[in-house]
Amino acid sequence: MSLKSIVGQLKEIRDGIGSMSRRAGGSDGRAGHGRAGSRHSWPGLWAEQPQRHGRGKEGPPPPQQHQGRWANLPPELLLDVIQRVEASEATWPARRQVVACAHVCRSWREITKEVVKTLEECGRITFPISLKQPGPREQPVQCFVRRDRATSTYLLYLGLSPSLNVENDKLLLAARKVRRATRTSFVISLASDDFSHSSSTYVGKLKPNFLGTKFTIFDSQPPPDVVVLPNNKPSKRQSKQVSPRLPLGNYNVATVTYELTVLRNRGPRRMQCTMHSIPAQCIQEGGKAPTPTGTIHSLDEPVSTLPSTKGKEPAAEFSSTSLSADLSGPACTDEEPLVLKNKAPRWHEQLQCWCLNFRGRVTVASVKNFQLVASVDPSLNIPAAEQEKVILQFGKIGKDIFTMDYRYPLSAFQAFAICLTSFDTKPACE
Image (cartoon, rainbow, N blue to C red):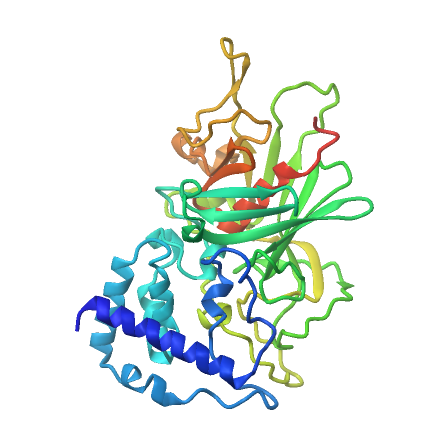
């Protein structure tokens, strides 16, 4: 049997399981998220998943005969099949077939977890958990941001620039600006049409101060290998979709500050990013940034609502779930946190403007354009070439279209949140 026929039958299995789940009539509130957005948004990967067997009458588990012959494949043959699919489908939307392999059954899921490496190792975004993993070290991940002024939404797509066929653009993250009486905030989600804090697609948020000089980035999950300092303020929000076994809270992972402009000069903005969850030593040779390695199941399937056991600590599991506690204290590492600063531009006499070398990725002059490099202590003995390496760059290429390129040690979520700070009003900085 050829590889193409195997992939074709995998798609038939996935469609069959989805139609069977819809006929069962069970719903956990997640089906349909993101259907109005991009065809290749994250919720589209789980919208057709079978219902999991949990507490109460949620329906019986799906019959095994739909996947029996595939579940009984020899492990050696199964490993070879998934390796071939992973190697051949390197870009989206074709990479959906790798996700389909993880959805066949438990044995396929375990093999897929072994085959698909982290984003730092393979440079390919496959599952939603890749959005929380550091980018590759050598080549940046190239993305673009589309702004919708009417709805105050910002969509992050994977790719060099918008394609002619919008359906082929892979939606990574979406954000919406929420205006309140005294300030604004940004809610970040996996879906372009669901920004509820109690939704399973909720990823994090960005909160500025009144002057627009300081922004705090909150993650929906605790970063790996760090200590979180809570502020002991209970939240009034309670999710109806989240298991009580999961640790819930907003985790302060980064702070972005803009320099206060007293004389209101027309120069470029000056910003500094303190990454509380990333140690500065990670950019040294042989250094390692915190990398979440949660299971595929915790991101692509509903969480079963099991009662918690008295006297036991809640089980921590990396999942894209909502939050019901506000742990706004910074997530601290044992070492000094990584600090990023914007690369100083040079003044071009002929053009009469400030210039940076974006290597062709930015074509329109804008105060929002910036490049971030590491600001490290000299005692760390980090080579000058490493300190000059651009970790994140953001710039305008057209009306409401911007490019965003990021690399190790930032993740897509962290980079996107930092770029969102450029869109907020900064009366004290301009």
